[in-house]
Length: 279
Figure (tube, rainbow, N blue to C red):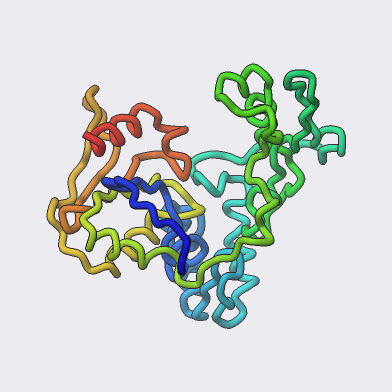
């Protein structure tokens, strides 16, 4: 007899921000065209890429295709090496000397017990899937690591004393984690059948999961447009993006002028967007 207990959560809807959904379109397949549209690389380089039938995929989830593609990719990559792949409108962190072993280990005393944690992430650790990047050893986000491991912060967040130190993008689960070949595109039809409301937002300057790829898999869903494409504004009259609704259930919203971490870089706009969705 199956002893497993099945729970039914009272979910009304979901919200996804810049989510990788289809490996056919998201991440690397959409980067060259996105970079061209932003003026980062010349049209001739994109034409060469397309004429050679080139496509590469996130984290080698599928074999790359095309002829003599790596030199073209290397040439394109030069245009965004100094830019933040998560927002092509922002520059990368300023290069620093490689961190020492002592720089990487933080310590915090929690009720007399010493907690250790890895401070920050290097560029190579943060984007291991990104090919041909420079300054792999620059150390980022140490302040976030130190803050969230502070004893007073842990207490305020009700983190139990038994919990280990916090680390960004914890890698200890990697051995048990694998990429699905089909991505997560399949779940949207399931959610539609069950009548769940969906908000998928995309920061328009994201280079990691470009808006271009999102538009392509949304088209593949072949859902009817029930609310036409239109600008959306915050209370101060600022145009903050554009939005449309598919099948009365899926709201696709673009956040203007920011990238992957849109709530971090466009706080008021994203707060207004989420509140409108919930209400």
